[in-house]
Image (cartoon, rainbow, N blue to C red; front, top):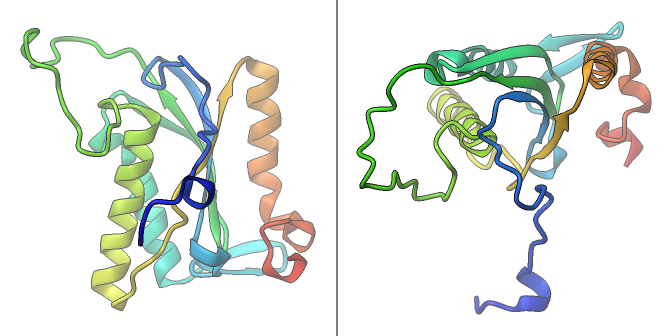
Length: 178
């Protein structure tokens, strides 16, 4: 397929000139391909994870193992998407990278950036589900992110994440509402 700028142009939703490696809180939403409900179901306003949902949950909780300067805030695995707060902390100590050599990443993400963290998570979930359930094509190409600017913003997002299973019936991500 030839590149067609009218059809294949993707507008970035990232803030221009913003350094997504800088310390702070980030709210992210990652959606499954075609909004397929892969991770479980809402029962009595509570999320019931299935095996694929458990894999996504384990991979989310493992993020700080792979990115030691990252802490996790509130998160929820929903039937067809994940909401979570990622906190990037100051990196302490040496980076073990030559000052003369630029670290490269084939996907273009800066090391320990929000993009690199999400790419790692999506890859881990895809590998885990692929090996356990012989499935592929788990995620939509991109993800939504919001830089958390203050404690009021943090509190609002935290409440939103915690309430997601109870408001699933009205959620725009719910396939019934599409």
